[in-house]
Length: 240
Ligand SMILES: [Zn+2]
Image (cartoon, rainbow, N blue to C red; front, side):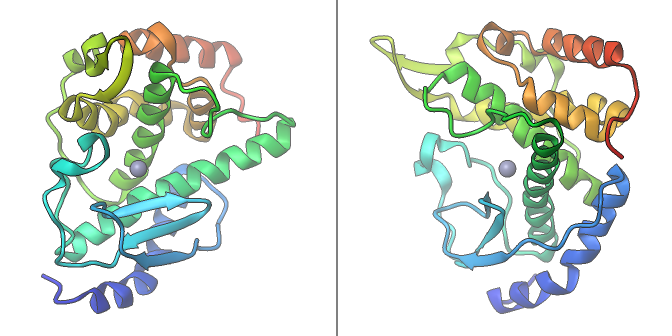
C-alpha cells in the first residue's frame, strides 16, 4: 500500500517512460515525449485524459462511493490505494493519449478531419459507439502493461435499447452497470481482435468507423464488417 499521494507523485515520473516504451514497442509506435501529468482533485474518478494531458486524482484516500457520479458509470472502479492501480490508471489514460497521437497523424497524412469527439448534435447511439471504441482502445493499451481478467461475455454485446433510460422520449441517462461493463471490458473484447491483427491501421479504422445508429445493437456484426473492410483494404501498412 502506498501511504500518500506524495509517493504517487514520485512514482509516476520514475515509471512513466518505461510504461510508454513498452506500449510503443508492442504496437510499433514512434517514441513520444511523455504527456504532462497533472495531479488534481478529480470528482470521484481516478484518471482523466483531456487535451493531451493526463490527470490523476490527487485526493488520495478521499474517495467516496461512486453512485452519485455522472451517469453512475464509475461504479465498481478500482481503489487508487496501491501503486498497481496507479499504474493501471496511468496505462489506460496513456491509451487515450496514443489514440489521439495516431489519429492526429492520420489527419495530417490524409488531410481528413475526423469527427471523433465534440459532436455538436447529441446522438445517444453514436456517443455510446464512440465511448465503447475509445475506452476499448485505452483498455487495450492498459492490458499491455497489466494482466487483467474480466468476466465479460459476448452475449452482453446484444444489449437492447433499454440500456438508455428515456422519459417521454428524451434521453435522461444510461443504465450504469451495463454501460460500465460494456464500454471498458466489452470495448476491449471488441477492439482486441482488430488491433491484434491490424495494429495501428486497425486503431485508425475502428476509431473513424465507430458503431453508430442500429449498429450498436449488434456489435459482433459491426466487428465482422470492420474485419471485412480491413481485409479488402489489404494488409498494406500505409504508415510505418
Ligand atoms: Zn478512458
